[in-house]
Image (cartoon, rainbow, N blue to C red; front, side, top):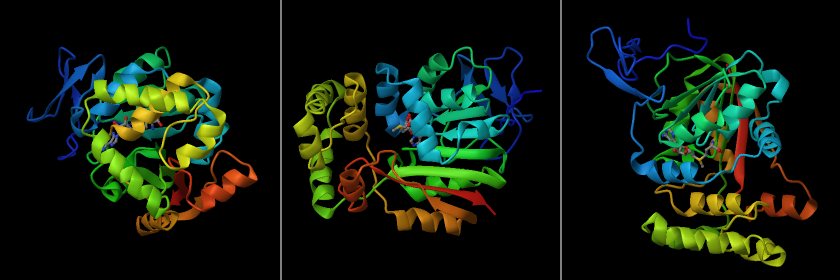
Length: 311
Ligand SMILES: C[S@@+](CC[C@H](N)C(=O)[O-])C[C@H]1O[C@@H](n2cnc3c(N)ncnc32)[C@H](O)[C@@H]1O
């Protein structure tokens, strides 16, 4: 028997099992056939999230030590708590947090809408506790309440309606299980205005046109004075690694949807969905000036981050 929660057809809930030749999953009535490529069931195509498929299969941005720290900061969970737990990485992208969780002994299912799962497969090669699925978080192929811990980092705001995704994923947390969600934070109105004007253009660009701009942003993000001032007006990444800066900047300007939210909004979603013990997680970075700018919603690309327990 598989160590992971069984897969079902998302709409009917019918159990799925491998076809005799192993190239598909099929329900008993043989009315649903799900292709399996490179061992990954493919419930959906990249569709409106295509830029992520490209981004994650183009850039190498995983850094073990940094990813472990970020994971703990953005989920409120320490690594020793993961051992033996059933965990869902909702929107796993290139799989950096699936790797962190698996190496800590968690049994992790990573779901992403795009071919980013192929990158995740490479990154997690040889790790026995990882399963990957190309699927839509709004129509997940599991029975409700399948996971002890569900986390989603920087994902749900990229769909047409963030809350619909939040609610759909919440159902898969077991009673007593934990749910941690990180979303983009709403900035000051003037920053939102500039960003919306810019993204109205960049989201229409071909990736080949957009990438040189991202490389330009990544260069600016390496210049100390500029990265601490100009990127409060126009977003570009200030990550220490150049390739991460290009990737992060592309990640900001390419996706079709990008919604920004407030802490109050996210807290209210957790409450409505029946979660208790809610905790607003602080940003990873500290420092007086940083925290002041964060509290005043001046940091573009920063987050709102909540964790809670399902009642
Ligand atoms: C910014 S990336 C974050 C990836 C990963 N969590 C990380 O931090 O490295 C957002 C990812 O969410 C995925 N995504 C967005 N909406 C989704 C949905 N409805 N179903 C599945 N994946 C989705 C995208 O394809 C993309 O790979």
